[in-house]
Amino acid sequence: MFSKPSIFLLLAVVVSAAVWCAFRIDAPVREKIVAAQGQGWKKSAEYRFHSAVRKIGDWPPVMVAAAVALGIARWRRNRKWMRILAAAMIASTAAGILANASRLTTGRTRPRESPRMEQGFYGPWHDGKITIGNSGFNSFPSGHTATAFGFAVVIVLGAPAWGLLAILGAGVVVWSSLAIGAHHPSDIVVSIFLASGVAWLVWRWMNRSGGILLDRALRLPDV
Image (cartoon, rainbow, N blue to C red; front, side):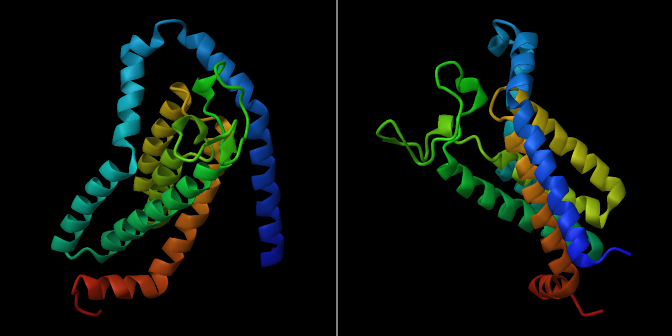
């Protein structure tokens, strides 16, 4: 069996290799997407679809849907799904906060800003102006991806069969982000790893002390 240090080292190598490869394909992927879309794409039904997916897959709608599902699970006294949904909401929120806090300071340009802006990381200050809060410089990492995968990975850990559907939904959000030029592949890959780590930690906590705290908060009897 592998020791824990060996496993962590292997994971570090895999993550590093995946991120490196993602940065290498950023430009080619964007070029192929733009070439396939052609002129007038922003007026197409496909563009409207991808824009709608990003709105529906953003944090507020996901939390509303999860809160409704959590309420149903509470009504049915289903501890398993109460814990899964609560953990998914926490992981999605935490991953989103981490991603959004990071992307406010990295100053990476969004793919769709080309050729008006030269692609790169400019940090919080560029050309005498603050980039924080400027959407054109808030590409890395992807907030949508972090919240979507933070939620989906917990579902995978708690209920694998349903988790496949959750991952599929998160994947659609990712593809829409690429299609409309909101993010580079590397923005997305980094966010997936970030969200997966957060989801694993939250799910582990939920199965230890978090589940007991949740039961108390929802006033469920001890078992």
